[in-house]
Image (cartoon, rainbow, N blue to C red):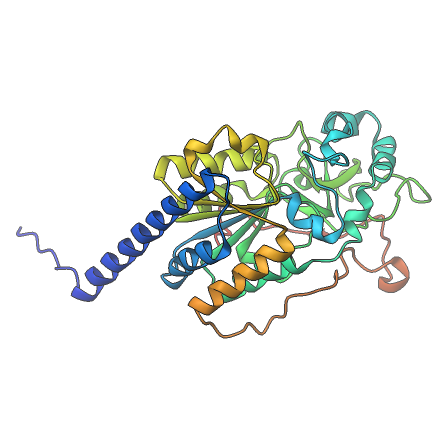
Length: 352
């Protein structure tokens, strides 16, 4: 039989050429920015904004990876490279599944002793609001956060992955329990469970519950709440990476840098200083925008909006923390110690 192949539509060919041209232009702009950044001057938002705007105009994938530096503007401590850094105060030994299983009650007391409850009392800052605004205006922009504070309000759920989990939900740690691998539970992590009701228990297997966060002896694929397969898909689709307030010292950032190096994808870092970890990897060509996230991110959002006007979203970016935990027993008529299931979509099926 004679094989008949349809000729590509002229419009499709032109659009493909235009898209490739935009990507090449952005990479050239990034190389110029990189040369300036390597001289220690940093890069201005006026340089980064137009480059990202061109990608968003063409609906190319832009991945924003956020770390603790973003939430510093909300009064929360950073994880590393500071006197009050969370990870510098023995947390790496305490925040493990093994430590939790040895003494769940002591583990929960340690959550409060280490000041992590203030993570649940903080409000989003202008940096969070700027990211939410960009995500609402541009569906091709997605956010992968390493933070567990739940402050990325306003980012559409299909455009957000909390890769290290969240303090606002609970998970089981018992072997073979569905809540230990696939679903999370409603609960009130802000309340000290060792006073009155004791350690929260799983309604399915009666095992102890802990916050749905990635602990240091767990991996990204240990629970569906981390959506690691979906995050990897976004990394592989990205035409630009935008880091905000991260130290480049965990698995997620390493995966991004490897993917960026393999495909020569531009990488922009918004931070107060050039992180120690990335100084050893300058050959990857990271362009640094130096300053606080509460200042640089709103400026970036304005620069992109000037280049790519878009209708304002009907969903306002919150400035105050919404209720994170379910209503108290007196409000809901339910026992807070026996939370209801909240199924989580399988990460491979929930490709937003």
